[in-house]
Image (tube, rainbow, N blue to C red):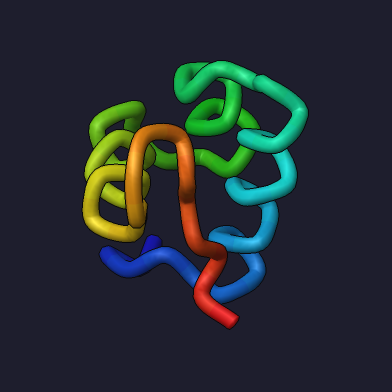
Length: 55
């Protein structure tokens, strides 16, 4: 599997975070580690709980 998240995966993360789905559940559903989700959210957040989906 690729080391980078796809745009489709980022969009999925965005939708799931908006529905208050846990990072663990998101990671499991797209087949990546929980730390990948954590790093993605940290890297692309403008503030607390404000994840930008990349569009």
